Length: 194
Image (cartoon, rainbow, N blue to C red; front, top):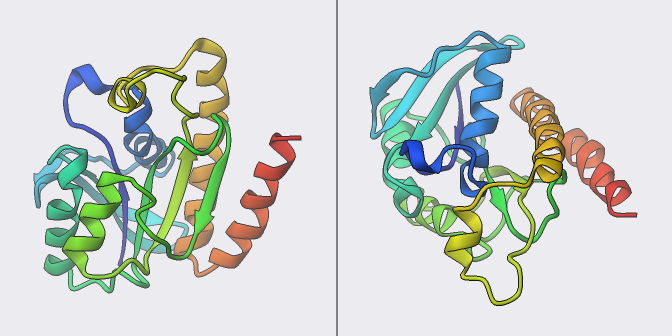
């Protein structure tokens, strides 16, 4: 069993914002693999199914971004998952341009409050993650205004491509191919920036 959680904020007004790119990616996986994410439990919207032979729980925490760890810890504890080997978190990253993703096997919170909350709640930072680029905040902007804003049409098209890349990377990672995912998609990121 593998938990794939996308981070975001639960309210219609936050749909398709930069901060909700994790939700968008999990929704795309759910659609591709015909998994319904409608069950409300563990402070999340959850759905279970099978992706390429691996049993998964797809989750979208409903605690708001800064308390994501409350929900994630409940799921991890309920299913007796090892967060270091059976959990993948997908979230927004302002240090990556729209259209880029970065795959990691572990890391720090890097200033992301949702990840800080998860590290604090599950007791480790050694979990797999996919960061989806949403672009840096414009000079003089408040960070909250930036991450809670929506993409321009041009950036949205790039982001849709990044979501497809994140889906493919997630599938590799749950199949034990995290190194391949890092090689394939982190290298692709470099090409996109040239």
